[in-house]
Length: 82
Image (cartoon, rainbow, N blue to C red):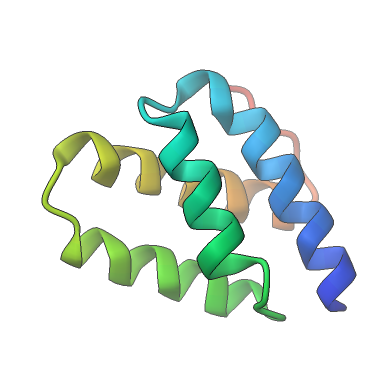
């Protein structure tokens, strides 16, 4: 997947997941800082999973799990319905 395609996918992930996220600003900053420079879906998921293990706030862990769910669903070409 080209980096520009992954960037578009991540933007779509955020847009679709945003209504279900607790800390939208934090999630947006996390995506921009940690995920936009990646070039593989597997790397995106790995970074999100790694952050879950480090994060101490349960609400942010939940937000990260939501993002993982949306990344997997949208990457498979499907629509995600919360």
